[in-house]
Length: 317
Length: 232
Image 1 (tube, rainbow over the protein chains, first blue to last red):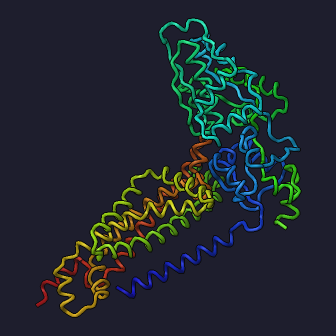
Image 2 (image 1 turned 90 degrees about the vertical axis):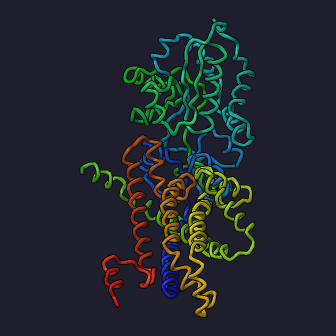
Image 3 (image 1 turned 135 degrees about the vertical axis):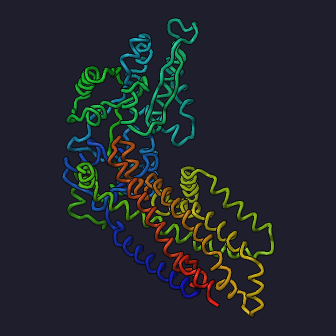
């Protein structure tokens, strides 16, 4: 028995060593590493498309992680390149640098409420309420709002309410004295900006119409939200024009924001009976983002620089 | 069949890489957890202070009640306070080890405690030293219970390790999360099927190890019982 236990332990130890060696071999070491979220890794307007457009690949497969963890991981140096969201306040706060998309791969991603046409037919007053925010929020403001939740620990609902009050958008609409007569379900994807925008729309509806709101603000991703909206489980959520165009409609990217909006508006209405309302104003595009010190030390300013670095030098000096 | 081959064509590389990472995570986590829990469990059966025993059992039970996702989140946040790496293998491994401790610890403790005291008395009477009693009497007799703990723990660890995909530790969870985010069934299946197969395989291997470890004199073989009893 004793001998068997010892030999078992020895065998285990050897296997551990073997696994460690194989792990060490595959360790990134000197190479630049990437950390992307699950959606970016699968979307045509994400890593797969980017690889084709710029003709490159990271020497080691990118690490997959939750989008909320990327920024800290990049700032701590655990990974070198992340797919930052342009309106995330942690990019300036952690002193990260957005690489210039010099070949123009990423389309514009202007955020706008996406609503079931049926819901609007039932409650026509909703459109005017939801469009109170259109053109109101620019990139800088959205970054500030996101930062308040991500870094200052405020609740998304409070941030949303404060913002609406500061812009004086909570004036009651028509007939708010009546009893609550209907119900709308507001959806959102699982990240801070979506939660803030979802809260803004929910508060607007609650405070200025007769409708009750059910919040479903932590859904697991674009396709979950979109399919729920199509099926009628949601009445509206905030979507981005580029995402609608490339990820849902599977079309080629369009540089011109107005043209992109026109196309998704038309296609969604015709194919799915869903309506894009007027965008909020900011453009939350995907980016490749690095630590500023690293990008200066390695001379990487744009995605093309990154590609050149990966193919010519490859390892850190 | 077409669907399966298309899936393997598209995701074969990812499945292979995910499976290897998953095995590594499970293997290291189980190894470390066993190295901690087995000696600790043996020590607890000899510990004169009952308070210590119930305290350690209590702590591990409490860890077990924390939902696995929450435990992962706790570890990441606690690590960030002490400026340890918040993503990658280390936080994932710590969470998995903490989660794997309880079944092994509790089964070791109860397994050894339930060995008939008269057997131990007889062994001591025959002149065995304490270590001999442990290795020749207590451990062989409690082996089925201890191994049951290790088996439960392993199957759980394989399941919980799918959550490690959230914090950049890789594994089959990566594929499942990708499938959920992009609404694609093939990704989810590509993550789930290998994980389930791995659980069955590891369970079987541990079962074999158990039979091999049990000394021949203790093996109960139904075909031979008759002969033994009929022996004069």
